[in-house]
Length: 188
Ligand SMILES: *[C@@H]1O[C@H](CO)[C@@H](O)[C@H](O)[C@H]1NC(C)=O
Ligand SMILES: *[C@@H]1O[C@H](CO)[C@@H](O)[C@H](O)[C@H]1NC(C)=O
Ligand SMILES: *[C@@H]1O[C@H](CO)[C@@H](O)[C@H](O)[C@H]1NC(C)=O
Image (cartoon, rainbow, N blue to C red; front, side, top):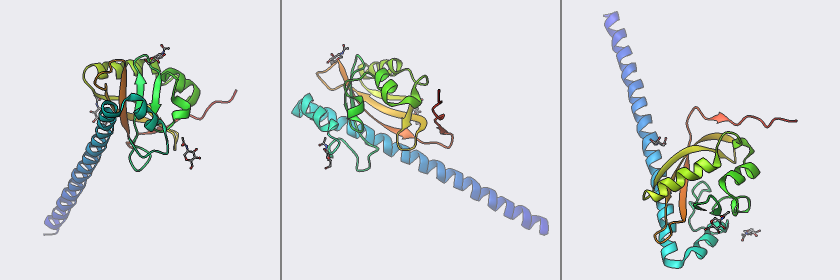
C-alpha cells in the first residue's frame, strides 16, 4: 500500500517534470519562431521601401536612430545594410560607429570583445553567399552591447531586387543558458 502510494507520487512527479520540460521547450520554440518572423518582416519592409522610395531614403531612415521605421519598439529589432565588399552602408543601432567601415574594421574599432574571435571578412562572405542564393539565415557569434555578452546571433539576409552588390539583414540574439561573458580586456 505504502509502496504503491510512493511509486504513484513519484510517477506523478515524473510526469509533472516531463510536462514542464515539454511546455518550456514549446515556449522557447515559439518565442524563437516569433523573433525569426520579426527579423524577416523588418528585412522585407526595408526591401519593399527600397523598391518604392529608393535606396538613399531607406539608408537615411535606417541610420536615423530617432526614426521608428525599420525598427521594433524595443531597441533589439533593427536593420543593417552592407555592400558586398563588406562596407557598412546603414545600421539601425550604431550608425556612427559602423557606417563606412567594413565588418572587419568595425569589429576592430568598436567591438574589442570580438577581435580574434570573429573574422569579419568571413562573416561578410557568408552573408553575401546567402544573399546571392536568394536570401536566408546565417548564424554567427556577436555581442550584446548592453551586457558585453558574447553569444550566438541569427540573422536573416536578403538582396533588394535590382541590387546585386548590397544586402539587407536583421537578426536576433539567441540567448541560451550557455552564454559566456566576454573576457575582460587585458591591460598592458
Ligand atoms: C535624435 O534625438 C536626440 C534627442 O532629441 C537628438 O539629440 C539627436 O540629435 C537626434 N539624432 C538625429 C540623428 O536626428
Ligand atoms: C564598396 O562598395 C560600396 C558600394 O558599392 C562603394 O561605395 C565603396 O566605395 C566600395 N568600397 C571599396 C573599398 O571598394
Ligand atoms: C541557427 O540558429 C537557430 C537558433 O538557435 C537554429 O534554430 C538553427 O537551426 C541554426 N541554423 C543552423 C544552420 O545552424
